[in-house]
Image (cartoon, rainbow, N blue to C red; front, side, top):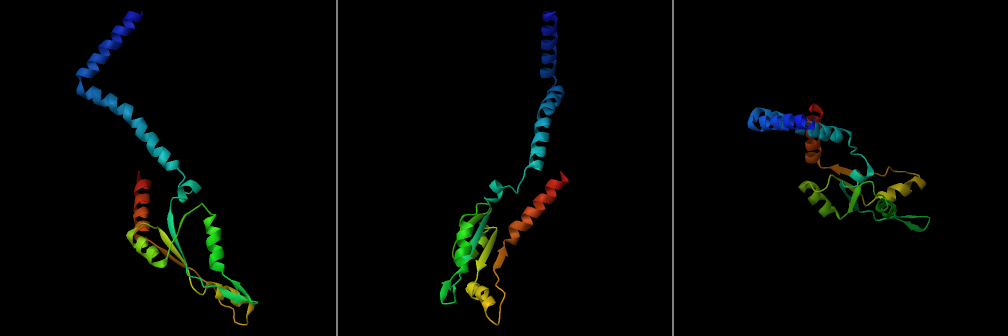
Length: 158
Protein backbone atom coordinates (compact mmCIF):
# COMPACT_ATOMS: atom_id res chain seq x y z
CA UNK A 1 0.00 0.00 0.00
CA UNK A 2 2.83 2.43 0.84
CA UNK A 3 4.49 1.49 -2.48
CA UNK A 4 1.31 2.48 -4.32
CA UNK A 5 1.12 5.82 -2.53
CA UNK A 6 4.79 6.53 -3.21
CA UNK A 7 4.50 5.62 -6.90
CA UNK A 8 1.40 7.83 -7.33
CA UNK A 9 3.15 10.71 -5.56
CA UNK A 10 6.30 10.42 -7.71
CA UNK A 11 4.23 10.08 -10.91
CA UNK A 12 2.30 13.26 -10.09
CA UNK A 13 5.47 15.12 -9.12
CA UNK A 14 7.11 14.20 -12.48
CA UNK A 15 4.00 15.31 -14.36
CA UNK A 16 3.97 18.68 -12.55
CA UNK A 17 7.66 19.27 -13.27
CA UNK A 18 7.18 18.48 -16.98
CA UNK A 19 4.12 20.70 -17.40
CA UNK A 20 5.06 24.40 -16.98
CA UNK A 21 1.46 25.55 -16.56
CA UNK A 22 0.88 23.07 -13.75
CA UNK A 23 4.15 24.08 -12.06
CA UNK A 24 3.23 27.76 -12.28
CA UNK A 25 -0.23 27.05 -10.84
CA UNK A 26 1.19 25.08 -7.91
CA UNK A 27 3.76 27.81 -7.16
CA UNK A 28 1.04 30.49 -7.30
CA UNK A 29 -1.09 28.48 -4.87
CA UNK A 30 1.88 28.35 -2.51
CA UNK A 31 2.70 32.09 -2.76
CA UNK A 32 -0.78 33.64 -2.78
CA UNK A 33 -1.67 32.75 0.83
CA UNK A 34 1.56 34.40 1.96
CA UNK A 35 0.70 37.60 0.09
CA UNK A 36 -2.83 37.52 1.50
CA UNK A 37 -1.42 37.23 5.03
CA UNK A 38 1.04 40.05 4.40
CA UNK A 39 -1.76 42.38 3.30
CA UNK A 40 -3.97 41.44 6.25
CA UNK A 41 -1.18 41.95 8.77
CA UNK A 42 -0.52 45.35 7.20
CA UNK A 43 -4.20 46.18 7.51
CA UNK A 44 -4.38 45.43 11.23
CA UNK A 45 -1.01 47.01 12.03
CA UNK A 46 -1.46 49.86 14.50
CA UNK A 47 0.41 52.91 13.19
CA UNK A 48 -0.63 54.91 16.27
CA UNK A 49 1.13 52.77 18.86
CA UNK A 50 3.73 54.56 20.99
CA UNK A 51 6.46 52.51 19.34
CA UNK A 52 5.48 53.72 15.86
CA UNK A 53 4.71 57.35 16.68
CA UNK A 54 8.03 57.58 18.53
CA UNK A 55 9.71 57.32 15.13
CA UNK A 56 7.98 60.44 13.78
CA UNK A 57 10.49 63.31 13.94
CA UNK A 58 8.95 66.59 15.10
CA UNK A 59 11.14 69.65 15.61
CA UNK A 60 10.64 71.75 18.74
CA UNK A 61 12.07 75.26 18.88
CA UNK A 62 12.04 77.21 22.13
CA UNK A 63 12.51 80.96 21.66
CA UNK A 64 10.77 81.90 24.92
CA UNK A 65 12.59 84.61 26.85
CA UNK A 66 10.62 84.13 30.04
CA UNK A 67 8.69 86.68 32.10
CA UNK A 68 8.63 88.25 35.53
CA UNK A 69 5.68 87.44 37.80
CA UNK A 70 5.62 88.72 41.40
CA UNK A 71 9.36 89.47 41.22
CA UNK A 72 10.07 85.88 40.16
CA UNK A 73 11.55 84.91 36.80
CA UNK A 74 9.38 82.27 35.05
CA UNK A 75 10.05 80.54 31.74
CA UNK A 76 7.15 78.34 30.61
CA UNK A 77 8.90 77.46 27.34
CA UNK A 78 11.69 75.74 29.26
CA UNK A 79 9.11 73.86 31.33
CA UNK A 80 7.37 72.67 28.16
CA UNK A 81 10.72 71.45 26.77
CA UNK A 82 11.48 69.56 30.00
CA UNK A 83 8.06 67.88 29.81
CA UNK A 84 8.58 66.91 26.17
CA UNK A 85 12.00 65.40 26.98
CA UNK A 86 10.25 62.84 29.17
CA UNK A 87 7.56 62.13 26.54
CA UNK A 88 8.53 59.24 24.24
CA UNK A 89 5.27 59.11 22.29
CA UNK A 90 6.65 61.34 19.51
CA UNK A 91 10.20 61.61 18.18
CA UNK A 92 10.86 65.10 19.50
CA UNK A 93 13.93 66.87 18.07
CA UNK A 94 15.00 69.95 20.05
CA UNK A 95 16.77 72.24 17.60
CA UNK A 96 17.17 75.92 16.70
CA UNK A 97 14.76 77.67 14.34
CA UNK A 98 16.99 77.63 11.25
CA UNK A 99 17.75 73.92 11.55
CA UNK A 100 14.07 73.13 12.10
CA UNK A 101 12.91 75.09 9.05
CA UNK A 102 15.66 73.68 6.83
CA UNK A 103 15.00 70.06 7.80
CA UNK A 104 11.23 70.56 7.57
CA UNK A 105 11.65 71.74 3.97
CA UNK A 106 13.98 68.80 3.25
CA UNK A 107 11.34 66.38 4.54
CA UNK A 108 13.43 65.13 7.46
CA UNK A 109 10.88 66.42 9.98
CA UNK A 110 7.13 65.90 9.77
CA UNK A 111 6.30 69.03 11.73
CA UNK A 112 7.79 71.96 13.61
CA UNK A 113 6.56 73.49 16.85
CA UNK A 114 7.84 76.96 17.73
CA UNK A 115 7.40 78.38 21.20
CA UNK A 116 7.59 82.17 20.53
CA UNK A 117 9.65 84.75 22.46
CA UNK A 118 6.62 86.18 24.27
CA UNK A 119 5.08 82.85 25.33
CA UNK A 120 5.73 83.25 29.06
CA UNK A 121 4.89 86.97 28.98
CA UNK A 122 1.47 86.24 27.49
CA UNK A 123 0.81 83.39 29.92
CA UNK A 124 1.67 85.55 32.92
CA UNK A 125 -0.50 88.40 31.57
CA UNK A 126 -3.48 86.55 33.05
CA UNK A 127 -2.53 88.15 36.37
CA UNK A 128 -2.70 91.65 34.82
CA UNK A 129 -5.60 93.86 33.79
CA UNK A 130 -4.98 93.05 30.10
CA UNK A 131 -4.70 89.25 29.67
CA UNK A 132 -3.42 87.97 26.34
CA UNK A 133 -3.70 84.58 24.68
CA UNK A 134 -0.45 82.64 24.42
CA UNK A 135 0.08 80.71 21.21
CA UNK A 136 2.58 78.31 19.69
CA UNK A 137 3.37 78.06 15.99
CA UNK A 138 2.78 74.67 14.39
CA UNK A 139 4.05 73.97 10.87
CA UNK A 140 3.70 70.72 8.97
CA UNK A 141 5.54 69.33 6.00
CA UNK A 142 2.63 69.31 3.56
CA UNK A 143 4.60 67.30 0.98
CA UNK A 144 4.94 64.38 3.37
CA UNK A 145 1.33 64.64 4.52
CA UNK A 146 0.02 64.69 0.95
CA UNK A 147 2.22 61.73 0.02
CA UNK A 148 0.98 59.73 3.03
CA UNK A 149 -2.65 60.52 2.17
CA UNK A 150 -2.12 59.23 -1.37
CA UNK A 151 -0.51 56.09 0.02
CA UNK A 152 -3.41 55.52 2.44
CA UNK A 153 -5.95 55.93 -0.38
CA UNK A 154 -4.01 53.44 -2.48
CA UNK A 155 -3.88 50.91 0.38
CA UNK A 156 -7.61 51.26 1.00
CA UNK A 157 -8.29 50.35 -2.63
CA UNK A 158 -6.39 47.09 -2.16
